[in-house]
Amino acid sequence: MSVAGTKKRPAKLAINRLRESRNLDDAAVERFFRRHEFPIVEGSRCTFAVWVNADAVYLRHRVVGLPDDLPLRRIEGTDLWYAVVEIPAESRVEYQFEVRRGDHWERFNDPSNPRVARSPVGNSSVCYSIDYTVPDWTLPDEEARPGELVELEVRSQAQRRTNRVTLYLPARFRMQQSPAGHAPRRRYPLLVVHDGGDFLEYASMKTVLDNLIHRLDMAETVVAFTYPGDRLVEYPNNSAHARFISHELVPRLEHDYPLIGQPSGRCLMGSSFGAVASLSTAVRNPGFYGSLILQSGSFLFTDIGDAHGGGPAFDPVVKFVNRYRARPTRVAERLFVSCGVYEPLIVQNRSMLSVFAETGMTVNYVESRDGHNWESWRDRLRDGLSWVFPGEQMFVYE
View 1: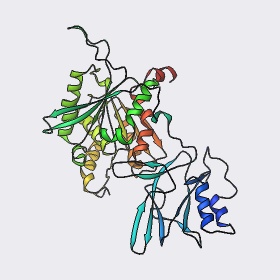
View 2: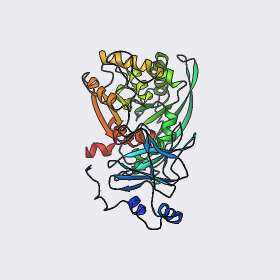
View 3: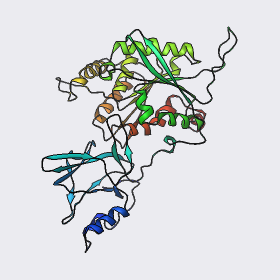
View 4: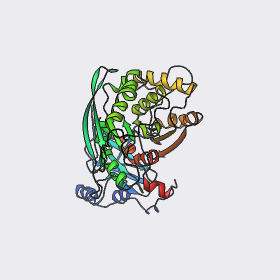
C-alpha cells in the first residue's frame, strides 16, 4: 500500500529481525522491548507487541476497516505476541490488548506504550502512525495568557432544575461598563458547548482556547460549557433542552455579559450526541444561531424500515434525522462539520453534507484519520473555531 508522505520501508521489520535471532530467550525479548518504542512504527507498518503468558491475545480497537478480532501471533518458544498492521500516515488509533487464559479474559492497555488517551468511559493506549504529531496548539504554552473559568448556576424553568455552566472568559476580557445610556465599547461572540465538562477534561479545550486566542487564530470569545443531565434523553431533539439553551441560558448571558447578541455572534457546538443536540436546538430556533460546529454527529437515519443498528437510545435520533432529511431547513448561516474516517459514523456524516448544503447553508467539512474519540475532536478544534470566529491572523493570511 503506497501512502503519500510515508518513509521508505526498512528492508526487514524489527520483529522479523528478532524472530531470526539465534538465541531467542527471555533476555533477548527483554532487550527488544527495552530498545524500541511501542507500537513500532516502520513506514506504514505498525508492530503491536506484548510479552505475556496467555492462550490467545487480540488487538481491540474501533477502526472501521480493520477486522474486529485482530489476533496476535506468538513467536514460538517465547511469550511474545505480535501483529503487524498497515496504518496510513497521519493516523491516530486507540487500542487495547485482550488476553485469554482458559475461560478467563482480561483487557488492558499496552504496558510498553506510555501514550494514553482518556475519556469518560476509560483510558486507551494510542498508536501514532508515521507523520502524525500532536498539534502544538493543544499543549500548554507559557506565552499564552490564560483565560478564566467562572462557575455559574443557571435556573431552568424549562427543565425544572438548576444547571451548572462553566464560563470561559478570555484573558483580556473586560466587562467595560459604560455610562448609562451608552453601549459597551466592546462585545464578544458566544460559543455554547454541549458536554462542556468533557471538552474541558478530555479535549484540553481551555488550553486550546488560550493558545488560539493568543496566536490570533480565533477571536476573543466567551464560551459557555454546559453539563447535561441525562444526555441520552436530553440531547436527541428535546424541547426542554432547546428552550433552556436558546431561551434561558443565552439570553441570561447576553444580559449579564458584553456579548454581541446577534446571530453572527452565536455558535452552538457538540460532538456525537452533542452534535445532534446542537442541530436539533438550532432547528427549533432557526436563525437564532449564526454558526454550528458539529463533530462526529450521531446522525443515524433509515431509508426503509426501522433497523438502524444503534439500539433504543438512537430511536429519537433516527426519528429526528429522518424528518430533517425529508424536509431540511436552513437553521444557521454556516456549519462546520468534521468526522474521523475510521468511525462507524463516517457514512452518515458524509451523507448529511448534501442535505445541509441544499438549504443554502455554507458547509465546511473536514475529515481526519482518526476515530470517535475526544482527542480526535480536540485535533479539529482549530479548524472549526478559527473558521467560525476567526482572529486577526486568519483574516490576514486566508
